[in-house]
Image (tube, rainbow, N blue to C red):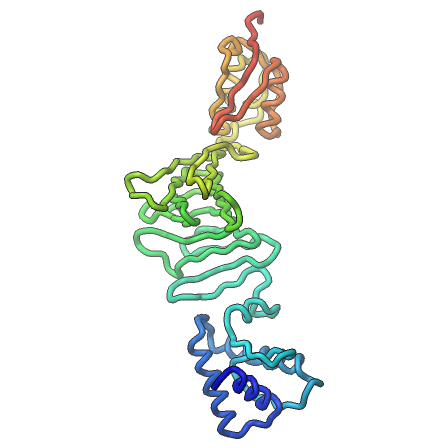
Length: 336
């Protein structure tokens, strides 16, 4: 049967003009399409979808022609009477209760689960190992229903924050294109959109191993170890990793009390030593005479870069970010 004859047969079916043999052929064909589809549905989902499909057919064709509704796993275009086989495109593009407004979860292959956040809000996902994933809008992850004995591996497209349950026996591995992020237990963010030129990994807590895999042997992979407040940017075109600091560093080891961030006649070297312990970031005084400078001030409840602005202003200095280190420039305080 060619496409033209097939379309005519569908029109006859909707108009209630098919013979019993033709109706039987259409039902057999629709059942065959259902078995061949790559999607996996429960019996309850099939019943719900069947009802929705025919409701949509009814709403699109009522008043256009007389017809008798039968059942089948297909939907007709009202304008051209072209059959649309029930596929993932039709199912996931329709606004309905089964299509979750925040995320779509469907098992697309044995033992695997895909989750896509199609909403404008973050979506929290708790994995079976206790790890938390906060999936950003327009992002998706794929993971096994049950993690294996050797590792906990998933793949990400888009952006997500991970708070990983510690398990020394099973590393947590996130695959994003040609970049792999591996941890035992920590918190970090990965940003890897298909249309972007780079991939970004930033660490909130713990240590993260990040390395590339494309075209590299295990012994020669380019990679780095990230610690809190550090990030890397992986350029997809040049296959290079660039380490740097996150935009807004957080306290890694908060001071025991507020007096720890109140400085009275404290040498500049000691002030930066305190900040180094609190943020896990290295500060370098390029002019050694700056060690003699004295700082007075209260740095509580201020972001790191605001703290730096106050310190540098007090001693007529500036700072510069180079990679994961902050360099302080100034004439020094030899006369103090």
